[in-house]
Image (cartoon, rainbow over all chains, first blue to last red; front, side, top):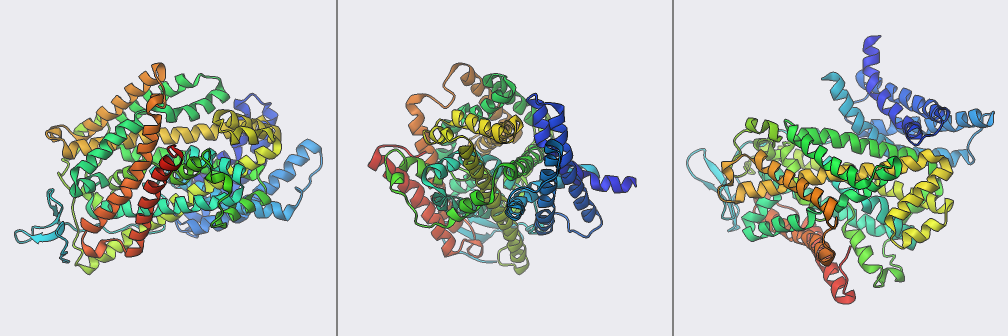
Length: 135
Length: 496
């Protein structure tokens, strides 16, 4: 179990931090903690879990280390799903009922393209953290 | 072993086993074995420095500004500018990976005064701490701490950090990789919140509107700005030349034979620095196989990491600017008029209205992060470049270690920076601002000429650039120098 946690930690950390950026900044500028908490839970946790999954794929040898294409494909699916979850859950918290964003397919296509950039940044930080963890 | 007929450069067999490569009139380079290249598809490398220096206000502010004024179609010029810089990066890497020498040493092998020209330009252009203002001002908006205080503290922290490092390159590559990684990840997240499919499609589509030049772009007011934005797309001034120093310190190609630069505290551990670079046997097929591997490695860096990340950040910030204008149409006027601080602040407010004040703060946080990356990269690069030229070409300088020279330039730059921040004009005296802008663009045209000379005359024939690469670099020289002069003669204004 400890090995599993160790292996998944770098990916979880990067994904969670990226998804929680909005929440962290909310605290800095004096927003209510509830706002920050919603941002962290609805986006930080899903991105963190997807990041952990990527780390585990890497540790198990199913994804080659330092390669861009597999990470890009992984996040092309995972990032839009995480953002969709965040939209649905945020509506649930603040409006009281879940709902899809307008033009859901356009939304997903846009998120998929943005995910390419996310994948580059994720890999860049992830590689560093993996080195630190394994050092 | 290839024997070039170029008078400036040729292999020569001295004693048995002591073959050297003669390039110019400087000390010949001994022949050594080229190290094995790493896998081409990688993510970590010296490109991080070029991205840190290159992704600045041009990408996050100037190009979004041009898109708002002239429409997304103007972005084809950005595509040309960044692609040209990617080719320049590959050619800078060619000389350094083949010899372990910086491009400054290459210039000195052609004609020593060229190198001294760059030494002087670096001092004139880069000692002013104005580049700190945008990032520190963004931080002031978030925290309320006066920007001059933040800037002065940042300067001292940077100095201490670099002085304590065992190997400066390793420390800085780690720090910058994490900072840029966070910037890229954060930019993607924020763009995913505020942008939409239509903005992205128009921004990306605009990159392929080749030949689109609106009449407004040819006016006295806009021509120098548009040309400056194209010239400064990605790294500007001498940043590409400094990249060769980082490439060498990363151990790429023959750089593996050059000791790494150490922080002041660990200067005593620095190995003896050789007085010149090295060359590999270009007549040996196995050595040429390794060379091709190194070229693939650096091409991946240039295309995906440098070109891709620079493109990603501008596309993201353009999408952000379009969203901000939709939320608050007044921003268009501020951006068009070039009121940078006010425009960035208004954009932050627009994001705050769209997604809560948190988004506005995140946006300013990124501007601060871009400023921090540029400052870290610039201070290290300037000190590294000046120390390199001093060590190899100032008589008697080899009596001290390269690390001491580096520390001297670094702390000199920091001391001068703090004095100017407190008492002087941060961008340089108003009367010489145009001269500094001129020199910055002139240096870019000049390094293209230097690249042509160095790579075609100082390297063995099998590893010289192909004719089409020379054509692109030649185009760069004509573009940078031609536009600079055209703007001066036609409008009486310096580009930038």
